[in-house]
Image 1 (tube, helix red, strand yellow):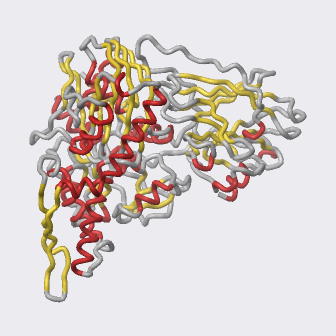
Image 2 (image 1 turned 60 degrees about the vertical axis):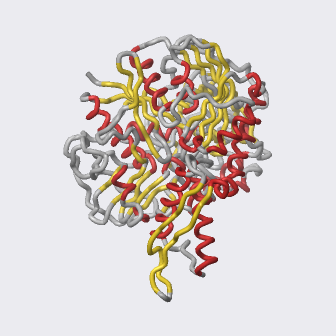
Image 3 (image 1 turned 60 degrees about the horizontal axis):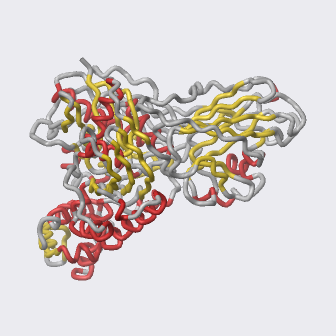
Amino acid sequence: MARAIGIDLGTTNSCAAVMDSQRPRVITYKGGGSTIPSVFAIDDSGNRLVGQEAKRQAQLNPANTVMASKRLIGRNFHSKTIDKVKQVFTYEMLEGENKEVLIKIKDQVFTLEQISAAILQRIRGVAEEALEAEVDQAVITVPAYFNDRQRQAVRNAGKLAELKVLRILNEPTAAALAYGLGKNLEQRIAVYDLGGGTFDISVIDIKDRIFEVIATGGDTFLGGVDFDDRLMRHVLESFLEEHGLDLSWDRVAIQRIRDAAEAAKIELSARTTTRIHIPYIAKGSSGPIDIDMEVTRSLLERLTGDLVARTIATCERIFGEAGTSANQIDEVLLVGGQSRMPLVQKRVTTFLGKPPSKGVHPDEAVGIGAAIMAHSLSSGSDVTLLDVLPMPIGINKMNGTMHVLFQKNQPLPDYKTRTLTTSKDNQRTIMLKIYQGESRLVAENELLGTFLFRGIRRAPKGKVKIEVTFHIDSEGILNLTARDKETGQSVESTLRIGQPQKPKKRAKPPKPTPKPAPKAAPTPFSMPTSSLMQEIGGAVAAPNLGTPAASHSGVVPDPAEAGSSEGLTERLDSPATLSRPDVLQPSPTAPTATPGAAQPESAEDADTALASTTTQAATDPGLFGRVMGWFKGLFGG
């Protein structure tokens, strides 16, 4: 009988859990481990490695080892976040056709969805071995502060891994499920989740089997790797000062120092002093030079105190949004490996006026909660989960500001209707750009995608009214439908980064012939035939995960015919709001548009070209305040 599992897809480590006899448990693998490093690599022989084996060889093969890919998934190549990452990570990043991030490893190029899919497939394989049953369904967790693009990218990765993704679940919510289910509680809790790459804080009300998120927020670029980097940079600066040698250009040295810094940081959670010893890190005029230095807890706290302060500042802001104070919080859960740091626990205790709860395991709570949700969705048990939107979603206005459609912390699911009108005579298409973020300026928010409504009937400007319905499902993923208010004719479009092709069969996938890596045309991602049922320590092969995710397609409007969201009527129709469900079920979503279905219908349309409705993730921010910004964004960005 096929099983459904919960997967905590982490930045540094991932794990899986399952419900057995109405009790959740973390799946342990051969050798006794319960986590898999979220690492993917290709070695000198061309073998694809996932997990511990990939991490083990990282020091000698840093350029071809991908770590912390979760920080990159669903992001725009030109974002400030990616600029920061490129200064730290040792592998090569390329810009894709739709401004997404691609990873070049040797002579092949991979999407972030493919990298994540390889990790998910590895988790699935070892889970099947441990359970002695097929695993075909999963709930996958993401940071609460992930935007729509990032959530959809994780869902696509699950599909590439041949998993039916029952739900994308927020990590703090999963931890709350692990803490509160079956305890007949009536509490307001705070979940402080400081993991390897991200930070989340959520305020959640628990009433027996009902879990209601009141407010959530966080930072998708603040986590344990940032603490590692601070200590690593201190070691580099100390070495430069002592020996006059700059190691920052040496990828192998950087990886060795990073690993040593991470190990020292972990030790300093239990001890006040440790040593970093790295033999033969460089060659000097008189021979090999080692790194051998004492590191104290107080030094680490001085180097990283501002990072901890950032988390507390976020907590204060989210508590304000929730309309709650620290003394109204019954329990605080610390989740994520970095939450073990004594300074973190001290600052949280000071902020809340009470010590954190010991009721959950920091490394296992998210996976356990995901398993509870997977069981609920696959068996129909009566767990009610009421979540919220982490960031506002809206469209651009003529002055470059964002017209907010859905406010932050809006209960999910929800939908709104708005009316668009044509701005030119005989206009045939209307384009709409959707943004997500907390800034008033669209240029500072994430462009989720571009929707194009075509085939509009010819009429004088202002005569055609297009009613657009924006629907956000329980996972925080947006879908759109549109209809002509006069004729009732429907046009549907769905916001997507791209859809994976149907996966190949898992048995004996073909091994591709390596090709030179183009700038933005990934080669098919397939791994050599090998059993997934291997120990974590062995080289692990994943099956063919299909070609890179294909984009939905629409039509780029002719500038003489097309309009944009600037023609949005200022009159706002009465927004319709969905009632929250009493029992958690997969929420209905709008029908999905068929990829590539839109084609020119006449000679007049023949000069329009196909364009992605999903992965046009960014345009020149300076263009957004201009009347023709949408046109220049397409053809000049």
